[in-house]
Image (tube, rainbow, N blue to C red; front, side):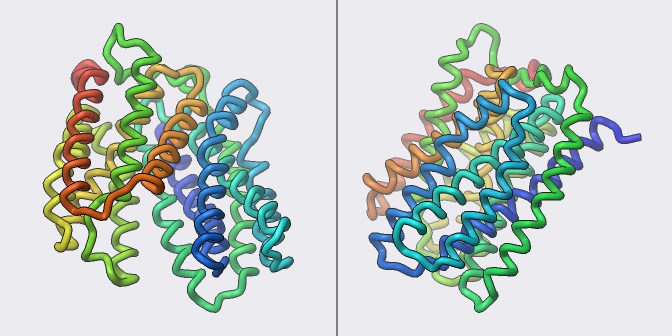
Length: 356
């Protein structure tokens, strides 16, 4: 008989794969656009906005209506948007329609995975962290495949394979006991802290993390292999954040991911392995912020996840319009914002012995 822990492990691995395949499909299409920089930048802005910001709406809808199945809707949207682009080869209205459809499917896959891995976890952060980490591996794989001569039909086939996997996830969801489904195990926030304050704190930390990620000094990144390593370490860090939070405690993990990452991020400008360690530590913050926000939004984990993705987009958007090429300026910003984020996290999180 399948135990609750077995279901959590199964759900996390399942949605690691689904999330990875989702990003392969999206980034394969995106990197096959081959247009002028202005067109590509606009497409990237619209794609990221639709894929990330509305997750708050889709997550809230899933929290309110159990019969709403975002994963089942996502795959047909992904496949239709993908095929619409490649079959039409249009760069006008049809292209933008295809991009909107694909981006919406992407958002729905994220919510489907978040809802399942959070609700089945019993308050543990490893399942959702492993699910989220799959995206980093999918992004770089999609980019690499787009640079080859592989037919888009093979990627469409990969997209179609996601549907039976999503159905397996829905079967796991039906087996979740009510006490798990209500997310009662998430108790990482100090008693007396207002939900609004914790939510604002999480939004700020995630937005800063997103903003900083674009300013991390990385003059060493000049080859395709180094880009692959970058995404591998990012993905590994996201999963490791959940694992360490469950093993050694969320406050210790927050210290490692926010303060411990600093010297590696700063000193690794020209030294790849040092920089990669810093990026891995830095990526662990994802699990910490999820633990914080779900603790004050137990009845709405989908909406909680959506708030963090909206914050990711906000931080990225700020970096696109206000960023610096100066090494000194970026180092100063990283140190200052990290200190603020650490203070916020320590002010919100319970001591590890109380969170167990």
